Image (tube, rainbow, N blue to C red; front, side, top):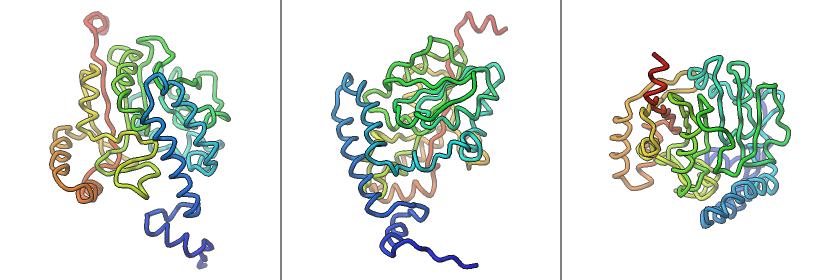
Length: 303
């Protein structure tokens, strides 16, 4: 039976032009979201480090309060948490887990992924800056949801086997990115892994400003390339860094050198052309895993 699209013509045309065919909001609601997020992001961009310790929490709470139709809130169904909605992320993450692992997810949002892996590991911690988005979150005994200031990780050094973040690094002020990496490195056990998934800046922007601007002006304060992220991992001390590409059902290791060369070539073109080519030839999301080196003492115990 043929169905009729009941959206107003202006809404259907707007969605077609900007690639939002599945968007349920009206053009006015999308534009309002953009203007609010751009305003709040500007306050974060020009803030000092000390101001950001408060703003990371307050501005995201303000966004969710002022934009109640934000997809992060409306697309979340608590009864399905950790099931079909997040299955691609969970399937990728599980290859790095074991039954005795202690896992930390940073920027857990509605905690769907963190909750989904509680049955696979010993303990799961979920860190989030926004109280608004975690308000209804609850889980089993081996799950803890903690609020933090976006800087200090409230866990002991060398206590976590796997750290995971998905769509988080781009929300951190670029002046704070190295400190974030260093803090992750500190809480990892020797030989532990940091799995970082973040949108590729060459294909972006990926935040709400993607419908209006050539570069991110919303809460994606910096969108990275594979090259930039690799350098950040290495600067923080990670001994090995691996890249993965693929589709939700299957991700495979891919030589980082090839990605670096490809990005260097694409960067030579004007922005509009490089973005179009990047979207055709690169994964829109970077999947990178850094492995903390083992100390001599822990290496001897392993033997």
